Image (cartoon, rainbow, N blue to C red; front, side):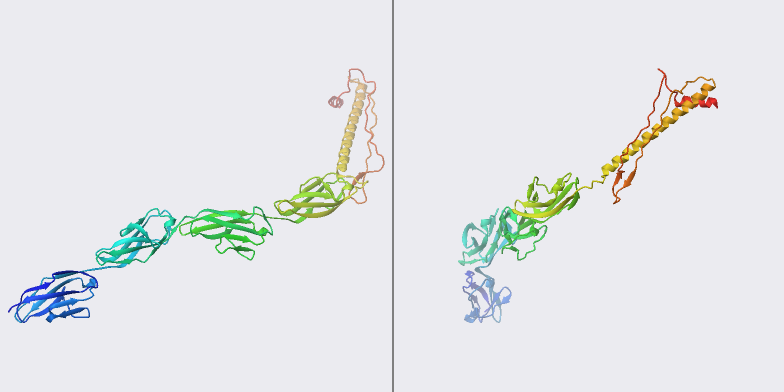
Length: 476
């Protein structure tokens, strides 16, 4: 009898993963043989697949979603064969492989950013999702969680749970850490004291607002060199000078950063020290009437103030420079300069022994020499002028006498007499040490030439030089 009316029951199955199902094949005909097919392959017996009842029954235990496919039964005998309609086996499974992801994917997020979290899972039917942060359930649901303008308080470990309403099972994803960082702001450096004095202990503290700050210190633009005297706390917040030195003066910078921002602060450290290395500059021996000029200097921050004393008595004035004109022998003695630092409250002194030597009685100063030279020049010039005038007068007289003897018109000047000119005799010599020019020790006076005109006619004057020369030329 030929094969006919091949059917499989049940005609469909909606299963849950890890359950079992059985399919039974029936057919008309005689001497029947059965083969089970899935898709285009023959189903063979295994630990989970059992074929019984002469091959007409197919049983599958612990089904998985891989068993979800179409099954057919093929029946044949020696004279004919036939195949059943497909039977669809649906397997509900999951959720599994539940996982979470963030967009944009970053290790750190700046406060105020927008973040989208997505949850996925292999599941049939599709899973339902619930969200958690740090183990606390959130009111949000669905495959995506959007965090807008995220705040620092929202940082934490996020996870999602997938639930399958068919399998009645759930699965929670591995947590995803969302690190939210506040921007670095308000960086400042505070010193433990307003006035830093050499030798004292000083601390600089770098304060900031923001999360996960990392601090780096620099001095005058270069990396800070640490030593036994210059130390940093474990987190680099506090810079300590055990005993601060003047070399520690400078500009200090604290650079604070985190993965999303950075900022810095500066402070200028002035180490007050001194006074030290005080000294007086000036001559230790001068002559009377010379100027006393002494300059006191000292290394000090802030600049030192100065006080001068002579032989223990205070001298008015607080300048670094001491001046006195026309020194006298009474100005000799021990000059003491005291330097004071108003911040460190320290003092330092230096002394100088000054000798004011009496001036030489036989000597002549530079001003004296200049006066003598000027006087000599004046006397010589006056003598030369007087001699020239006498010469002209005598020449005019001789010319007039010749003219009168020749009967020419002219004035009789014989009545004008001229006295002789006496010149001063000035002598110079050097003192024994060849350094000072002085006048001879004799009393020397200068007699100047004197011209007297006797019996001068009223309203008349001697002929001038030009008139005299004209007469001479006419005589020639």
